Length: 299
Image (cartoon, rainbow, N blue to C red):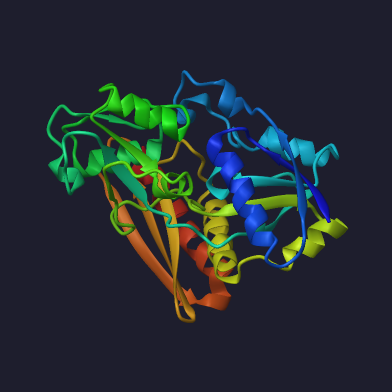
């Protein structure tokens, strides 16, 4: 079966297509043709993502190729997908999840805890969540916007433009990189919902889509359901200092949520637990709780 795949052109995006090909070919013989798409998020590099004020900055143009019939499927980092995608589309499958944590990366000043970052250190991130969470644990640092692909960000660190940067551990591992770093625990620094998950998007009821949807990773599927439902009920976007991640233990699923004030002075981390088959219900419950307090926290 031949599939035309829509994707961004970054090293990480192309690696994720490669990982999809390796995974799906364990079950069905698939020949891929890659269609590279440039998104608004790729073009605008001089602003933090949260300041642009739009959702789906890395998603819309990639999915449009599918809607126009130029591609059969689109490959995404699930964390880049807005809570609502075009109703003609669906997340048809997910690959086994990579580690979802964020990591603190450094080239010189080694630390083993966020609180030990020296006063006045410059930390690079363009994520409001990472910025606010970091300020909660250490308000003595200077946070400076950081854009570009993973290689570019690490190069800026090594060129002494930053003392530390924060990146998703999954991207580091997928690219085979090994910078000096510490992995931030999920229960103190919950990541972006969907972080570490590769999501495949396609037209609903398409025959090719139905074929490959049978091979979705079952455990990751439950985590994706919980975290996507959380996003919908929390009614939050990329400008909200909000994180959530789910963990599966036997027949139970736990979702860890984190919400901070913009200045980091207030932060609340709450766990919710239910049976695996209730993943959607669990995500809804967690999202409703966050929505009930978000105005008070962010005002």
